[in-house]
Length: 323
Image 1: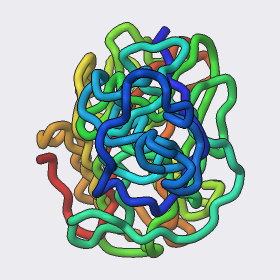
Image 2: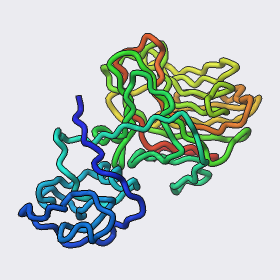
Image 3: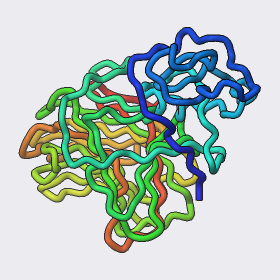
Image 4: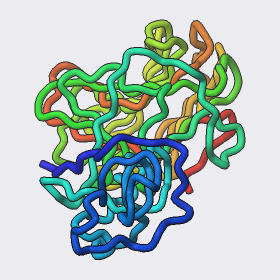
């Protein structure tokens, strides 16, 4: 089992890490060191008040007295922002090599996000390097853990990780910046599935929905036995499978889904830039416009021992390629 690093003290948004005080004394005389704070004055000589903590920026544990130099992911969760400088954090009681943070469970989807990435036509960008925006949530998590962690990440500070020792499901929804009812829609994400995981009748990895609950129409990317990948369009029930062996194991793989939405549309799916599914003529028109993207570990009911990591999701109205 991976060891967990606690999220630490209360988060605080908007405090800059650009300038920090000199490193704190290591004698232990600064009783405010690594304590909660609201302003620098709360810290005395014990560093600056950064992200709600009397602390300082760091690059190694030796700079942190009786604390530790938090990983990029742990620092991001303490500061509730992406890509901060690493900061000194309290030493966790069960220190390990990984930082792992549960994703909040919330049945509601709220504001439409503004994509933050340099991708033409982007409707959604999520690197899983920091706490998910408030409008996103894991709305279903049945006997399956859903965390953001850095034990296994394709790039950056972290990735989303779904895991269960027995049967269970989990879905994390993200709203697109605008709805799409026709024309080109593309999605790119990275997935990691260990070879020891037995794929059941199906294991859904990613979906595009035309409603918040996905009950009207959706386009799914699923893993199947024999390492087949399949794109499924509902409610018409059309399935578009790859050949066996398209799903790669024990490595990060870049999956790119491209759909031309329409009654005479098209579907393609590539793995690491190589096409595994090509359907130049396929019904891809859903009852409503696509508005929600979902990353998930949604197996059939006979699933056990699911272990799936997903990283760096982009959805756009322009073609996407693997770097």
